[in-house]
Length: 336
Image 1: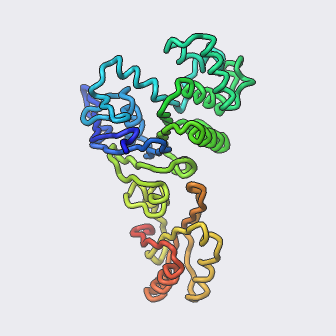
Image 2: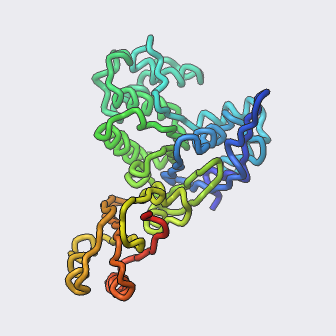
Image 3: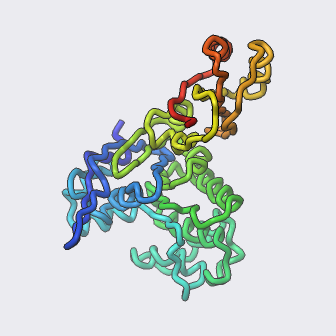
């Protein structure tokens, strides 16, 4: 099946009189129809440049983008404008028109496309109802909270019946509770309309909350990609480990340097497996990291344990955990 978006060997170089910056280096990815796809990376990784390449607001220096099998680099300016109507964007800072009411903000892209004013207002009201802002249609952006502004931006994006919704750090300016509500709204929209959603973020929590698949960008390169569960359970790249379990952090003043990471399934999360292991092996461990995430509706937990210096005891502990079908990964250089 043809992917909704195919990123093919995309590189982007910015040149100025004084220096050259390689923002993207040979990235190739497929984003399937109906995916909620996360593109994640630290600040400066190149992810926002990549999202602007997806609709050719930024033209790649090398490589190209295919949307529904059509090569964007072969399109004329008029064809690109037509294509962009099916690729909506929402942004970190909302980009609303401050002199227009909420209703008029949602109508704006339809006006640009030449939609009849009466029809545009009717459609805008439908989408304001979906984002739960019907009572705010006469308000101005300055009278709204950050979460309400983002809901207006989402309604405006939906007004053009897009096939793709690009979210560029759309929750970065929001508090955690509002972020959760916006992500829940995006999930509902995805379930109702089947829109392909691409989420650009620096937050692993956002990816784990909503995405089905994820790509990790590091220094302009694709470090790793796969399902969210695969990357969470067994991150392979340095960038993924840093995002999943702070793999670059080193803990000082520890005697034993042998550390393991355990990933718990939905069932094993509720068993006192660590306590039982300590009792069985008659030796203590140090818990350096522990958390539980909801990934695709399934509870997935992780722990980083510092094992005893005694090699035989450490091996018995690892064997004990593996016998209980836990994923065990040895970490190098986690402690100094």
